[in-house]
Image (tube, rainbow, N blue to C red; front, side, top):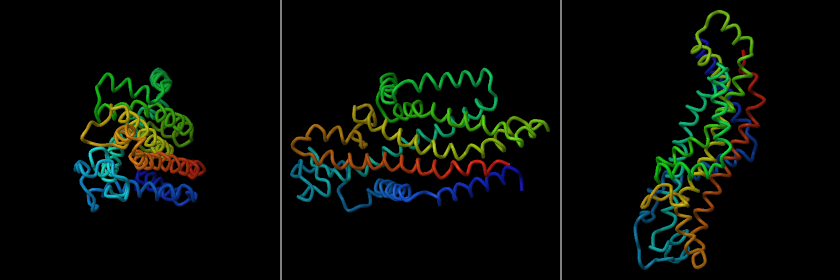
Length: 292
């Protein structure tokens, strides 16, 4: 068995063990989050109208009175159906962006912490500059340059979540790079690629995992904020932010239009944050055990 395979198997076992050590609050958050994601995934299979189906007779109908579980909007569209579509689109956009962040940001953090020198200085200053901007303000700037739409939002989320990922991975890499087994690998002439992929990456994977969870919550927040401002995914496609924007126009006469999407948006952000905090608490004591 190769060193890399052994490290990856040990890493997987530690991840599973860390998951089993989640506290009750994090476990509850995990199940609620899975429920929200499942609702978005199977919403089209539920016995409810299509999210874009207009019913003039049901305009602004309250919940339970011909308007479905969460009522109907100003066009008579079922709010629950639109929430299901909104959850799906919000998570697709956010998760796609964070996937890019996890791969590219982790790679840059590894290189920055391992190589050091000018490369480390440039990447660190880049992270500092970008991190100094508020997330939503930076998202507004990106969408103003690239125009509204899902791809612009993905790019904005990547730019917002990249600096924290680079910082976390760089710090973890600096710690691991001083370990005896890394020094030994350098002495025996191991290539930079082997040291990065076999010795360093498995040892910083747990911090990457916890930071990814936090990045998803930031991504959901940025996507929803930009969609609320009309800069996210464009109609007729719905996201939780755009549903909130449409509902806010009728909040005085139909407050249920903002209750449903607001509830699921809060649940999504809160549960992802709680899960990330639970993972961090469970993972931190385990990190030294993978070093060998």
